[in-house]
Length: 165
Image (cartoon, rainbow, N blue to C red; front, side, top):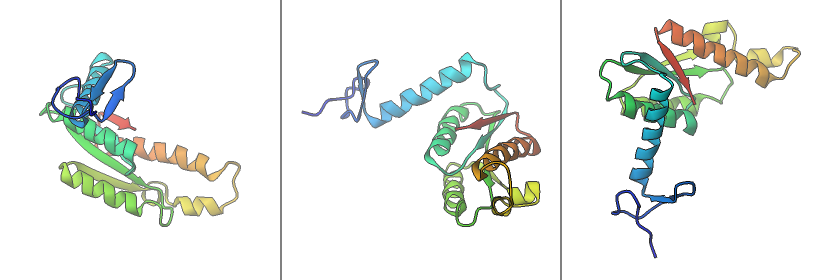
């Protein structure tokens, strides 16, 4: 027997939320997630009504989901602006597909996208760094430089906030 969504009582449930006992259809599930994010933003005063909000987007499911949720919320705030920042680390064959996905998604929801590269920001790629002798593993350098690249890019484009996911 198919269980109906406990919110809309119209569609088949696709998700059971154990802590509340709710059974949700995909539409109601998505709406509850957006509402939870909205409450969190308001509770912690994360954004102002007129902020330029940069979202660090890798092209993966987490960052694209964050971008989509913030887009849903911020379209209710006509004075705010949402922009995507994507960092190309310069690892051959690594970021190309994700950049394509990110560009396509941003075009679909009409979000401005800024792509910055390690080469542009630091004068060398992650591939360049990887071949050098160093104290720490490649991932340690990449993580620190990626965060620095996101922070600097957000400043460069005049963002008031930077969201990562």
